Image (cartoon, rainbow, N blue to C red; front, side, top):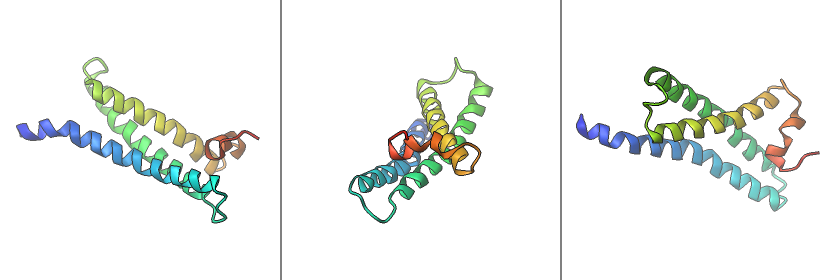
Length: 119
């Protein structure tokens, strides 16, 4: 059991890189294709990446939030504080897009996240 506790931070870091980096790579690809005026709707790649980010952020905030509630903020290691903040930022961005995607807020409110401009 001692070896698992030593590799647990590495596992958490790798999972964070994959779950946040994967959708980020899809979004970057979509932004590049949008800059090249690709007619095959690359904005959908950006939207899917942002929606996945919302789900990943929700799961991360719940996971680390419950752990923080049990342990307390002051006893939380620095890496877990960083991951909680990172998942929180990702969740807020994804939440904005999910609210617009579900039609609960006007889509123009989050249009700048996908297209990089405010109309």
